Amino acid sequence: MAPVLKHGRGKPLTSQTKEVLYCLYKYFENECNNNPSSIMTPTQLVAKSTGISIASVRKVVSESKCRPSDQEVTFKSPKKKPNRKPTIVIDNFDQQVIRRTIHDFHITNKEIPTLKTLHAKLKEDIDYKGCVSTLRKHVMSLGFNWKQTEDNRKLLMEKHEIRYLRINYLMKIAEYREQRRPIVYTDETYIHTSHTLSKSWSDGSTSGLKQHISKGNRLIIVHAGGMDGFIPNALLMFKANQKSGDYHDNMNYDNYSRWIQTQLIPNLQPNSVVVVDNAPYHNSIQNPAPNSNSRKQQMIDWLTLRNIEHSSTLLKPQLYELILQNKARFVEYKIDEILRQHGHTVLRLPPYHPEFNPIENIWGIVKTYVAKKNVAMNMKVIMSLAEEK
Image 1 (cartoon, rainbow, N blue to C red):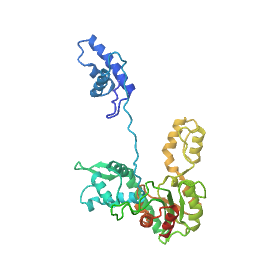
Image 2: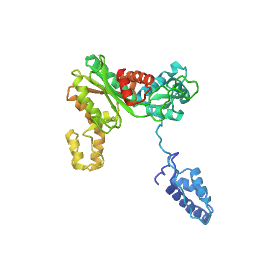
Image 3: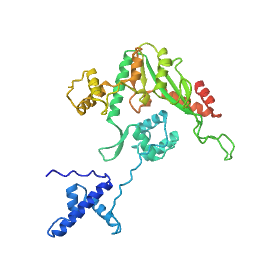
Image 4: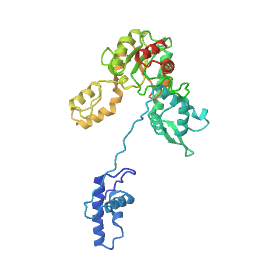
């Protein structure tokens, strides 16, 4: 007899599963009544034959007995917990602060970081607005996870994949520097028209500067720079969600590629290395690999073009498995191709490492300057202050 597959621990039972368990229980109950010499109870027989724990079977039976005898026995599936995203949005500058705080916590605070102690420090340092649960989501999104240490204490550690990408990036950029190639960092940020200091002197009256309830309109800023400063004529500023003009809507691939071709490339030195982060519009794929729903001929053409050994007699699932095994080696990004055509190379920052981009420091200075001077709180003033700094 084949072994019974065990139900995953902690996995909720659906209403259909409960109904099957209940029917099995009634069947074995009847069998045990007809065979008094049976050494196992109906509950034990159900658990043994299905792989469900005895406790779970008992809960199902108990749930069925809670209903009046004249009503049909029905079961409910447990409600799914919503996968809520953090309601507090943090920019790249704050992400850098959180990462650096975690890395240096054992030095500055002389203890292992926990979410509570980390939350208290961030609230003091950058006036972090989220609660501990929100901070947990932000920390996890930055590539950290909880890892068991040898002394059975939990310590915040980075995932292996993130560390590998960081090492690879550092080796690449060291190689380009040794070749004396110009290295240009690019980045984007945004400032809301309501962006101002969170605290000011007050005597408790209603007089004085008031913060807007809403965040207001958003100014998007794009720039690039290197050892010699910012790239001339590369500054781009536009209002988000506007419906007209060369740059409209929010930052996306169309706006970003237009900026690269019209403002960045014409002002780059020959054979430059352009450093970008992992924003989705930086990673728009050119000639993407077929998916499982693509036609068989598309799969064959993709494999043939890349000289991957295959046979036309293979079935679609077999061809698609070949594609999955090889597509990572043939990823082509649109931005990379545009810059390659002009003799430049793209280097991507490792995920969750804004501290490797010097422009992030500039954004912090600009935003602080704007916050101090932003009294009018309108788009024209925000643009003027940002360009002024």
